[in-house]
Length: 276
Image (cartoon, rainbow, N blue to C red; front, side):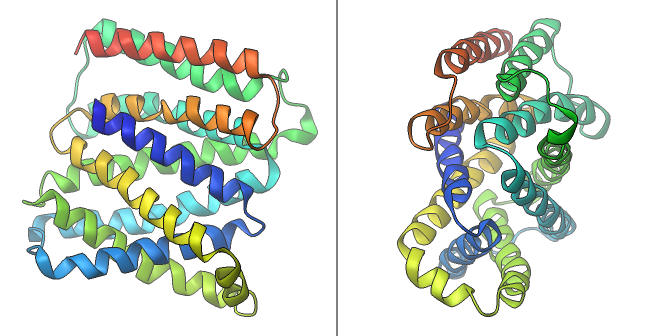
């Protein structure tokens, strides 16, 4: 639980960095280039993952492409406090259902109730200004799309790391291959601007690259021995941190509403964890 809560804090931090950046595609691409280079330096010290895990690594790399593109478009059209809660809050329920079908994981009724309460609390953060108007549906669309990508790569990585033989090898190869495939595309798309953007933001890019790698690496490590939906829901406490970051640092609104929703999330996670 401690490891996943640390991952939640780290995850909220790098999402806030991406949202605050002038070019969100470059922020994500260069950030993962940094995390991939860090992973590459560590590869010689670990054995190769078991061959059974490689198809999952390849699938996860491809799925992360979709995740980043939907996340970038969500942040382009909506606030951190709208897109992030809706995407992250929808994912645990989707993972719980698909995990039952794909991974054979089953939860006690109280755990499912806690999961539902936590998810409702998280999703409610997206609607602090009421239901979206017709012209404001783009952030909602991209947030739900992001949730589907999150569900897919969480299942892939949760199953893959259990086949890898060594969790850290799986994590490192995932980050290295993700950087090697996604970052060159970003550089080609931003061939005239990536260098000055990196020089202007290199400290934040290296820091957020390290933070993002640690955040998801911890989650994958815990998923190797714990139910996927439980890990996902606990990880989504990052939403509480993210909306408070949005309120205090990005000058977004509705602090009281967000604190109330955060308490609902905490109550759901307590219920869920008590029954596991």
